[in-house]
Image: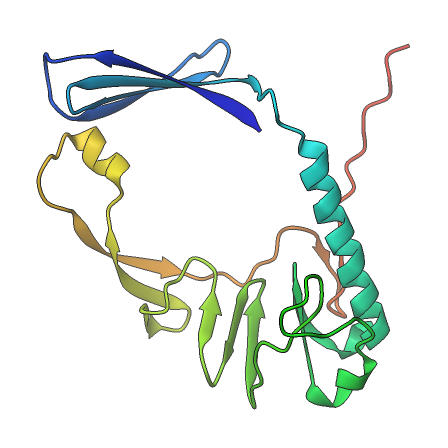
Length: 206
């Protein structure tokens, strides 16, 4: 990815503790300035890092999707209850159809992470069993105060304290979040299949 240039200067005047972000409206470049412990820290992005090679990460991710697709086709698409980037959920009676190597610790092999009698699927990264609840962005300690509305205690980030110049103590707040079932990363068909969006490119200039 892009490299981050970090510069430090001695700064013993003014406020002791603050953070500001400056955005260049012409170029869109962002500069972050932090005053901390008598130091002024300036951070900004440079072009692609010297040792960065995004093609490697893209290739690994692409290949993982092909592997997942091979596993799903081996089981049968309509027998797969749910899948994520690195897992599938199926009924135990279809385990014999899994053609991929299975082992607890071997690299690249599948392993059985959980068995359950009940499974509720709410959407992508949103499912529950009788053992636990997994909803992306919702901590396990959150309380469901009404259907799909969760409340939990959140500690404010260091950025908040920096922006407000708060040196002592930690801000804590009660937060509520509504979980949506909408899936907007593709076209959802009546039978549950999802096909990707296709973006057409404008014709090349003549």
